[in-house]
Image (cartoon, rainbow, N blue to C red; front, side, top):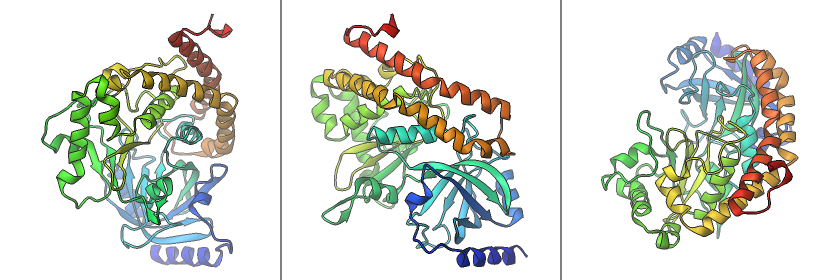
Length: 409
């Protein structure tokens, strides 16, 4: 009976398909609250929720805007955000059919927003990063329906994968630059890491850097350059740091990312409260140079007086990096640029997104917080930008011995 229902849903979607071709940009349109429908066996949905700590895949059909993709794979996802009530989901279009795609995508993520009472922190930060020229996934919001029943408000997140690498890094002489080595940083519970060298064996680096592309290559080819980068970051003196490490890591881009992440006061990021967390790193195709890619900003906007040098000295890489005066200067300049970019825009963007999701959030039957808690968090978030901008500008003035703005006195 369920398969008959799915077939009927698929047929309706095909017949109702719009004439105009749609793209992944339409899916991730930040100005639209999307609707996504999943159709699957009710027993499978119950098993996914019951076994939410497992990564077991279940078959489903997915519909969006008149388009249906059959036989996709869905599974529970997340670390601290995993939930049996409102599971975060990874959707893989090629799980059961290697060549299957959806709008050119192999997968995407449905973030359950359980760690963000406002529902817009992650999506706001990623749009802000993009304004600042920082590599970040496209994101928007979606109402999720499972077998026709409203399952809550979700963040719709572009997967960091080969497809995204091709979008971000483009082509050189017709060669799409997506065949490098992509790693997701793996936070290891109880083992905080701050870029300290852990020896020449590759096992510690394999544990912390989960390879996402070119997985079949030799371990020395995959993780050897990571071990070398960490070793050299620990061994190299300040005088040689820019030259030696700059060949293996895009340092100006890293400084820009660190400054932007500090501006939005994310306490669980690259210099997180319990070590490094929540980022990808990509070794460019035919290169030894790595670049950082932003990921998971649910814990942004922590406090308006979040220190602009928070935990920089605790991390081997950032401590060495800011021993180079030019990068200290760049960091303060980017903080100032972030404050200028945020002025007027950030609060307006928060308000726009909050208005867009408001009814969907109020009606979300599975969110792990009350509507009163949501409304309080919403008001607190809107108060953040002006106070943070003022604080950062004051701290930059103090750090550079510039005249203090009137608001700092």
